[in-house]
Image (tube, rainbow, N blue to C red):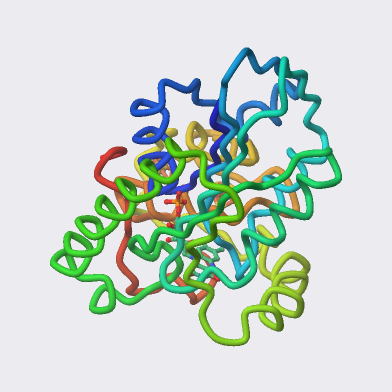
Length: 255
Ligand SMILES: Cc1cc2nc3c(=O)[nH]c(=O)nc-3n(C[C@H](O)[C@H](O)[C@H](O)COP(=O)(O)O)c2cc1C
Ligand code: SF4
Ligand code: SF4
């Protein structure tokens, strides 16, 4: 069973690859949280995987919240692995996942990072089409390596690009990000909006509602997954000045 969270498709594409190759069921954490579906039964030799993007050098809060709520039953302790996708450095994101899982009596046997195109307010030059294609090609090579290690059920095996000062960044920036950078107030919609409703459908926090054909944000804070900004067909969703003249990014699996 593989649980995933994804805003722009990188983590979904990674989780889908692993689920197809391993024959494991794929479960969307955002949907499960919305429906409060948190109890699962693992049969026989089912493996347990978590795939998610790195936000401010940590897992998205919804992922650790989900792990806290998770009620797992199993025939035998599952082989458990974690994969984070990130734009460059994961910090201690996998350690944070391991700590959350250990409170549930689960041992994270292996953990991995996959460098994928950055979806966070990045200039189009920094994430050109050529660069994206090159990064996605390299990611597929990393997926194969992860698959091999998980199939071999490697223990205590961690292949994570943490970057510099990982401990400090995860400990200091992640709580500040959660507190100040997940506020929905700066979101606004430009005149280019055609009222198609896609942003409402893709929001992982279920907090966008079309009122009189115009998207409005119904919660003070969200997951900051940037699905709305990146997936709007008209590029009509902006976040203060941060998104101005920045490109959009969506993994090809969701285009
Ligand atoms: C709010 C936010 C914070 C991010 N923080 C980091 C980070 O600390 N390190 C990093 O390398 N990438 C960071 N990224 C980039 C994403 O982790 C990366 O693009 C990821 O693959 C997106 O996954 P998704 O397409 O499944 O949503 C961040 C992205 C967002 C939206
Ligand atoms: S996805 Fe874009 S165009 Fe469609 S309703 Fe939302 S803001 Fe408007
Ligand atoms: S409002 Fe936008 S950034 Fe926030 S959770 Fe919804 S889709 Fe993601």
